[in-house]
Image (cartoon, rainbow, N blue to C red; front, side):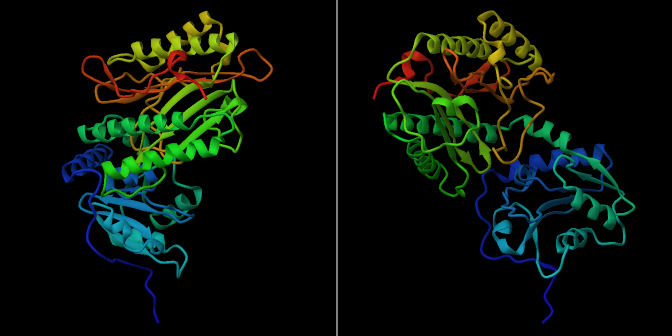
Length: 405
């Protein structure tokens, strides 16, 4: 029996995607404009975030390569046979399935879209994502082609959100707040970080399903940290049991069709000492100032400069751990990032309407020092023509988040 290197299979009906046909067309038009301005004959996307952004399909790699291939006339996803027709059902384009029977059938599937008769002169790739192995193989197949990085162009396009994207981000922020409320209900002495996190995650997933009944549900998560575990913003939950007086870090992350939103808050269990209260209030002062500084026409690095000066005045600049905020959209803790829109000293991007960005100052005071622990607040703001809209409603500060158990 001769088994195929690749094939197409339309099993079932096309599923309802997160966005309208008009929205996907808007995105493809933008990508084709990038192709035109850079004289590209073809673009090969390989990252989860860009494939999902343009096609609607979020792949599960498990060590296998995936792609989205765009020419001036054609638009295909390339997926592994293990996923059958799910990539076709969950995308707004055609799909080619490659098999495992022979090595490099993935590459053969890409070639099948354009053929070998007229190889593309210029090919756009994501140089921040393509592996050296795949790059070498593409170069051997398209030996007369020039490879041009399109990652930064596409990131710039993703940084400006459409009306439909803003709607899904707003729902994500609302659901993050719901998860936070559920977590607070479960905070008590002796409870573990794990069990508290599970309660918040389950509440959010059910609300996502209620809001988006036609979606796929994956990757929603919670980081609930206590005591020394609050020192890192991305520390996983553990089975540590809560003790009265603990500093707590509540972090909820609903994922809706690849769109990430977040709520992050500092809390204390039952009581707080003076040193901890002083550090917490200093971080809150910076947070409030940051919320005021975010507005259209302001440079990211200028916001950082002003907040650094405030932290220095308060005596906590040495304890600051990372940038003051970042873009939101098609991203996750294991894929995607719009690094051109982050509140860092080395980012000079000017804030524009329809950008979505967080304000999230954090300080970390090491163990053995008064007020030890990690302090972090996090709100999401939509940049408007004039001013901003804060879509995070969960309260912050000692008046609300010293939780009595």
